[in-house]
Amino acid sequence: MKFKTRDLSTAQRVLKIRKLKVGLTGRPDAQPVLNEIDLDIRAGETHCLVGESGSGKSVTSLATMGLLPKDALEVQGGLIDLEGFEITNATAAQMRDLRAQRVAMIFQEPMTALNPVLRVGEQIEEVLNMHTDLSKSEAKARTIDIMEQVHLPDVQRVYSAFPHQLSGGQRQRIMIAMALVLDPDLLIADEPTTALDVTTQLQILKLIEEMQERHGTAVLFITHDMGVVAEIADTVSVMQKGEIVESAPIRELLTNPQKDYTRKLLKAVPNLAPRPARAVSEKDAVLNVDRLEMTYGGGGWFRKSEGVRAARDVTFDIAPGRTLGIVGESGSGKSTVARCIMRLIDPTGGEVTVAATEISRLSRRNLQSHRKHLQIVFQDPYRSLNPRWTVARSLCEGPINFGTPKSEAMERAAELMELVDLPKDALDRYPHQFSGGQRQRIAIARAVAMKPDLLVADEAVSALDVSVQAQVLDLLDDVQDRFGIAMLFITHDLRVAAQICDDVLVMQKGQVVEQGPAAAVLANPRHDYTRSLIEAAPGRHWDFANFRALERAPAVEGPIA
Image 1 (cartoon, rainbow, N blue to C red):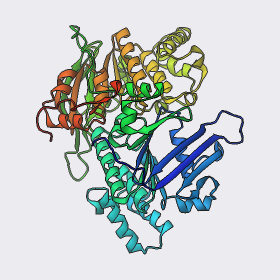
Image 2 (cartoon, rainbow, N blue to C red):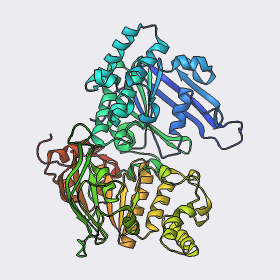
Image 3 (cartoon, rainbow, N blue to C red):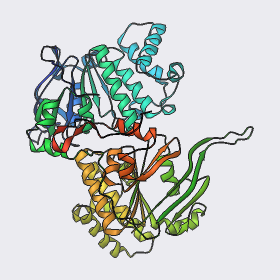
Image 4 (cartoon, rainbow, N blue to C red):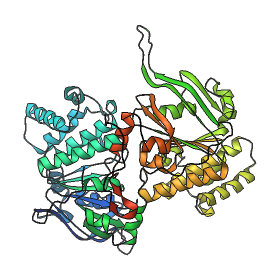
């Protein structure tokens, strides 16, 4: 993908937003959530709306769709015009007719947007049944056609599948098919690739671009990833605290940003240049993994099957104070290896040694005393923190369970809050009272409270915007240097791995295909699969920190698979 340089000035304007103000329902004097924003999108244009979490990006999209939660937010002024139709004054019935036919939306998480008890083909047909007079056979034919257009494999099988039977990328393709089945004038894509691995993300971005060119659709693309913006945008609007602070064509914004906030966002974008290597530790490894195997399924009452081998012959070690990154696509086996090491699942073969104790065959009772040596930080801190517990209770639970007096545990919790740059008085708050980045800081503090030898970070920054992501990576780096913790860092983003990992291990279909120092693996990959991951990294043709395009992308030696 290259930078877009199309002249869209004469194209028909599809969406016009003028002085849009959105505030808290029934509270016109409160600080507005959106403060008089202006936005224009023309036919065939991809307009990217970027900014940190809480900047107002998703609220803008929900207002345009007429989906603001009525008991929480309301339009308090301004204009949203979709090709002459005033959305802000539309009735509920008018908006139902408008959605899907003239404006449609792709949400970030298709698993929560799709109905889990309906087959995906039926869900696409439901859109046609609500908005057209097509017969049952015509609706099915149209559904099959749009599924083929989004390049789903084995369409007849997928048509009859339930959402949980499809991969994340396939579910997102279903959402795109559902959004475009009626050829809307405007497509709103709200973080549609955030949780996808880089190769699937690239496929989805190319698919949206292909469908846009085929149907002439205007696209409002909401994202926090400036790498993605560089790949797909015609124009960009930067949001901060409910206001658009800068808007410009893509090349102009990336080469000559006018606002400090825009420059800050660009400088926070991770790149593929590896961090300076730490000195190789001569201490004994904290973690030794030897020929780890994990097979799901297999066996049965009447017949035997080999099952699914999610991890095969995985071997590596991590010394104190060093970070090993495991990278690969979804389904490569990364998280399976992490869960085997944490004994959240029991490996079917091999050995896992943590702090000189082989734990892969320990009983659950005997394993309990070794839990303090290894801790994990999950992708979604809101789901891993107990919503009914205060932060203080979450931070103190582990140490108290292992014999630390409550007063000492509370004192340690206050110290940890300072360590992760949160105020001590926040100890009495609950998880929902914090932002996503703050919750992840609390999750890190909870893990460090146990003074572990090994910290496992499983996609710990993949759902965070780039500036918060950079802060959390710096925090992990600081914690590791301060306490000498060994870290296993699971990620699908090689750009993130380059910023924090000393060594990198690349997995594909359960097997290790390449491993070594991060600088060697990322600069001179030996395996075709590693090269394909690097080629798929969004924005690799751009030097964001210095506001310039690269004459050529970082070299990847050898043929690309």
